[in-house]
Length: 88
Image (cartoon, rainbow, N blue to C red):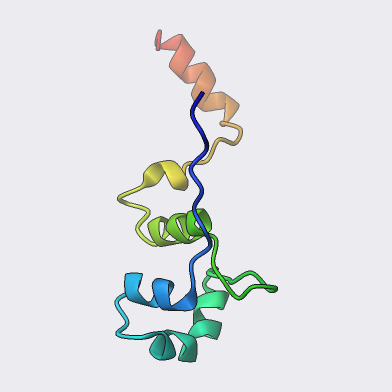
């Protein structure tokens, strides 16, 4: 049986480096801007969930990762009906 992979939360310094900042100070100056864009730290630890951070990064490029933005909602019944009439 395989063990789950443990990925600790990311520190602000680690997030800053991935985003291209030379150090955490430059990132921390813009932390509120990132929070408004959806990148939020855990309110207790001040760290970032690695999976949430990666998803946030990928959502910034929806053309490269359309599966993250694809809607699984209801389809227009007319288009389904027309498609079935055509044999599709």
